[in-house]
Image (cartoon, rainbow, N blue to C red):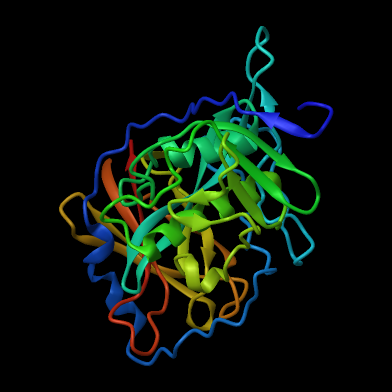
Length: 332
């Protein structure tokens, strides 16, 4: 970091990508029957200043030694990324675990899904770079950017976060990209950089020429984060990480959700799609934002093999199906 508070991007993602592809599991598992027909609609009551619900466990596979803290108020940090730790005795670069907000499909259209990624170098610049040019671990997620760009720097002056790109390749909205898709992509950048910096501040995206358009969306006046319940999936797993190997007979499920009466149903299916376990977790709240949930599942009776866990939110009135999130894991 320079003396003026700017940060220069020198990030490299280090998370392995060995997970099998699950295709469209999110759209079709029988677990949705758990939710029942009596669920009522969720009400979006938050504001742009709402603090994102945080996960209080270090994401699986993280190399960070410090567990994150919970953010309980709108003044608190918006994410809970572990502190950077040095990974090489020779290099000055450090590895950080940062939240990256990808896009996934839900019954209400595309929404943001959070996944923790590992980046080397500046955490904020690395998180945005991962979103612009990387790939998520979960094959059900995708980047909202079809063309990439480099991140020159990220600065935070206490009132505005400025993301400076290395070129203007992302200034215009590409053919075939709707205005809604472009706005969601901008929100992905906003949520990602806010989470990495632990600051809920307006975000400006600029390029070397001074332009402040991102996919045709003007950001010059600062773009605030939209209400969680309108832009993010209403359920999002943090643990297990995609492709995780479970040992010891216990599968820990944790993440965030806004689900009817704080109930988060889950099911586990085997590689043939047969349901082998079911249950539910209880979140810390519901309706106005996403709240943490966690539960331990006894999988000691399951045979060695590959399984998929699905968590769901209440669909609510007028919604064809609940929002869901899935992870593939292996029992050795």
